[in-house]
Length: 170
Image (tube, helix red, strand yellow):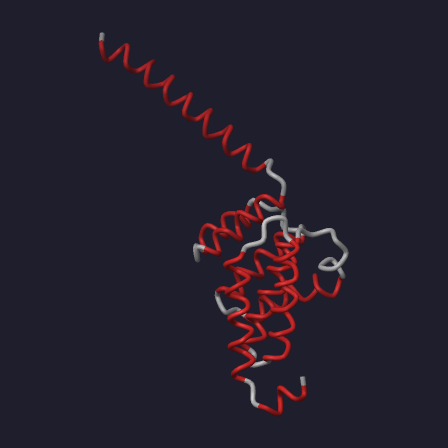
């Protein structure tokens, strides 16, 4: 008799748990791309690439936010070609300057391009993108002071590493 009572009870418990998980998943899928993008950036900030990839899967692939997050993931993995392939078309299209993207997204685009240019030993382009990234981080609703400090440190490090002739050229 106890086994008979516990089976329906367990079945109801499992069913309610499944309904809760299904409702949670539906709410996550229904989130706007911007929110999921920010979550993906937070994952990358914690150096949790798997978490960022999961966030990426929740953004429709045709969205600029998906391409920017995928580009940031590629930059974090030192995949220069993939970073350029994903991000340069967005930069050239003007989406980064027309106000249609969150400042955090534009900052991420420029920060990822800066990393890619660093990998190509192109410090001038990397500096340019770091300065553009900082402008966007400062324009964000909630400026991330730690990211700004890290970016400034990278700018100074790049300037110190340049020889005098390159500095004069700049």
